[in-house]
Image (tube, rainbow, N blue to C red; front, side):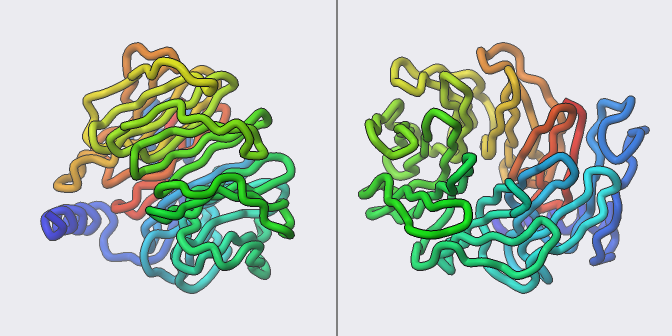
Length: 327
């Protein structure tokens, strides 16, 4: 399966991009006007890369991304205006989740066991937290960084001030917590082992499992009242009230639903596909369910996703590209 998948991807890359290993500015596809959006409803390439992008985050001007596997850099940004790529952190590492706020880019490194930050224009890397092997999921609020240590038997959820300092443990004895989301009223996280979705106050108080027995939950997003999560094994999106109650299936029938974002009254997610062909997709649906909207198909393992007021952005991991389309 591994060889078949990567033989397919290699042929696609050679045909579409040649062997140029240098990043270039946004490519116009299917009559798109501008790098993203414009009058076309088709997806565009924001930036073709010499690396495999994994997770992404956005601000008003840039798309920031972490890199999967070895490459010349591990954290970088691409301009929304022209797709120009600027590496922020050179060298190799094992960066996982990423977030941006207050002039800094934050990311976890599960192998180094660190939570790090660098200025949005680059500069010195600060390891704000060390000694947290398995650091994976990441989320920010106005004052703090929240992250998960995704150990199978003794995972945890913790937080620290945006500038570093004393680490506060919010939840212990978690079973492979792989993803976390936070807003002004609380936080929710996923335990992959056991398939639980847990929500609590910002201090970790009053934690309750709002769902259990999920097959392979991967990513989570929040609105004011509900949590939404993907399940990669059964290709579904489910939701439940953050205070508990019935679990609702909003979308199903996918190959491997992966990362998710919520924007206003819609959910956006990536389906990474079967791994045997270029058959991933990017989709959207109302937070209350209904028809699914196909934003892009024939994607090569789409991974991280982010949404702003007008545009959906995603990382095409095996296609080594950042892509975008109008909402």
